[in-house]
Every structure is written in structure tokens, then in C-alpha cells.
Image (cartoon, rainbow, N blue to C red; front, side, top):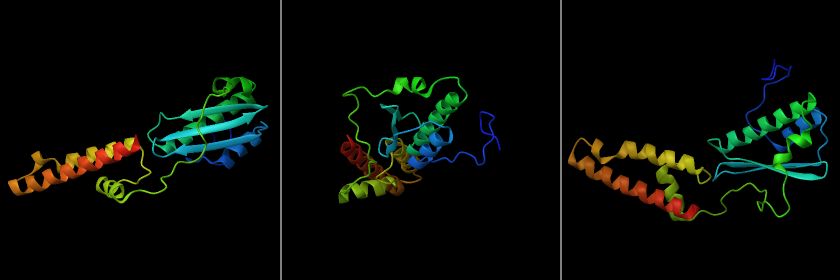
Length: 185
């Protein structure tokens, strides 16, 4: 099997990336690494990479994709492209990573994976109303709200009794959405 650069690989690239997979990638292509750390924030959908190469700290943050898994995968694809360019002699890895050099006093992000510690009962009910997990990204919450609004919009009701039920459901959906959004800011 060949990868997207035409080089022979044993297995296809997995969709998820772990620290061990990144370290293995660096070792496989002969780039000595001191430290690699990958973290994510499920609420914002962002993924973060922090690495040390030849005594310098580098950081990369990916937020352009739809969810955390895709942002983590984007980081692996970026790193793989830079490693392959280094291996082929096109560009030194340190030079390729220079835009991501961490400046003194720059980032204050602590590389821990964000998970909610304790969700209040009313907030738990709001997540249940929207049908999403407390770890869902803002994009996923917005999509769930839009989907429910399409289903329960009062203008779609065939009679007055159903219209009243749908209006109550819309109020419940909107109040749950507002509660979640207010707590996330």
C-alpha cells in the first residue's frame, strides 16, 4: 500500500493520533525528539501539539476542523508532511517548524485534556434536552439546536393542540441552549 506521497507503507494512517504514534513517527524517520505532547479541548474543538526539538520549544494549535478528532488528525498530517520533507532533504525539520517556535512568555495554555469536572443538575438537563454530551463542541451544540428547531417549529404543527406542545418544546430548547452558552463563556 502507498501513502499520499507515493511511498510504501505497511498500514494506512489511523484517524486518531496519540503521543506514542507521533513519537514513533519521529523515530521511524530519524528525527531525535526530546518531548512530544498532544492535548485537546473537546468544548472548543481545538487540538494542541507541543514538542521540543534541538533545545527549542514548538507549539501548534489546530482549530479549523469540525471537531477534535479531525483537528488531532490535522496535526498528525502536518507533522508527517514536515517529517517527510526533512527525510527527502527538501527542508530541515527545525526550519520547517520555525513558524511554530514558542516565544518566551507566549502561550499560557496548560496542556491538559479538558473534561468537565462536575456538571450542575440544571446544566445536565439542558444537555439532555439538546441531546448532546457535555464534552460536545460549540459547533455540535449549535447543530443539535438547529436540528431540534426544524423538528419542533410551531409552523409545522397540523392543529392548534400540537402547535401549543411544539411552542412549549421550542421554549425548552431555546432556554437549554441559552443556559449552556452562558455557562461556556
